[in-house]
Length: 261
Ligand code: ADP
Image 1 (cartoon, rainbow, N blue to C red):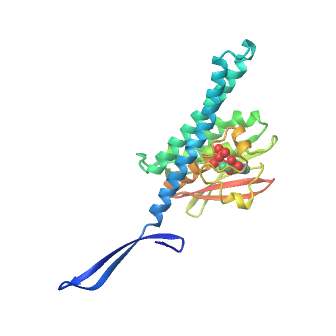
Image 2: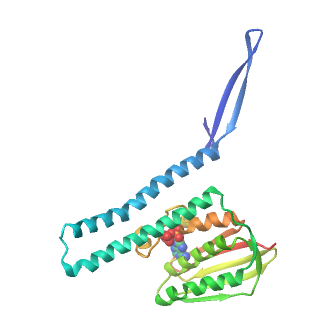
C-alpha cells in the first residue's frame, strides 16, 4: 500500500473459530525506508553504469582509430593523451564508487581514535597547496590544536573533499579559508571559499549522488559528482553535522561540527 508518501506492507489473516470466520488480523509494516533504499540502489546502479560507459566509449573510440591506422604519427601523442585523461577519469570514478559502497555497507572496520583536527587539516592543506597555487588561489588555515575522537581516514576524506571543491569551484585569484574553533560542546571546522557559490535550490541537491550544478564544468575540472555524497555519508558515519551557507557568485561556506567528547 502506498500512503502519505510512504509504503506499507499489509498482511491479512482470518480468525477462525469452530470452522467459522469470526474476524481478521491485519498487520501493517512500514517498509518505507526499505523501499526507498532499494530505489536509491537501483538509481545508483543505473547512474554508475552510465558514468562508466562515457569515458570507456571515448577510450575505445580513440584506440580504434589508432588501431586502424587513421592517426598520423605526429598526432599519436594527442590521442594517447585523450585515452590517458579518460582512463584517469575512470580510475577517479571507480575509486569514489568504492568509497561510497564501503560507507553504504556500514562495514568499515575502523575504530575511532583521538586525533588532532588542526594537525589533520594542516596535512590536507599542504597536500592541496600546489593545486591551489597553480590556480592562483590562496589557502590558509587558522585555529589551534584541538582533539576529537574520530576515524582519521574518513575525517581526512571528508575535509579533503570540501577543500578540493573550494579550490575547484573558485575564481582564479580567490581564497580558501579553513578554520577550526571550539564552541560549546562541539568543534567547528569551516571551509570558506570565494568561488562561484551555490543557489538555494541547488544547495538542497548538491549532496545527492552524481548531482552537479554544471555537469560539463564539473567534468572538465575532474569532478565525479560523488565528492559531496562521500562527505555526507562520511559525516553521518562520524556523527558530524554538516552546514552549508552560500551566495551565488560570492562564495560558499561548508561547516562540520564534531562532537567535543
Ligand atoms: P564534483 O565531483 O562534481 O565536484 P561533488 O559531489 O563534490 O561533485 O559536488 C557536487 C556539485 O556541487 C559540484 O558539481 C558543484 O556544482 C557543486 N559544488 C560543490 N562544492 C562547491 C563549492 N565549494 N562551490 C560551488 N559549487 C560547489
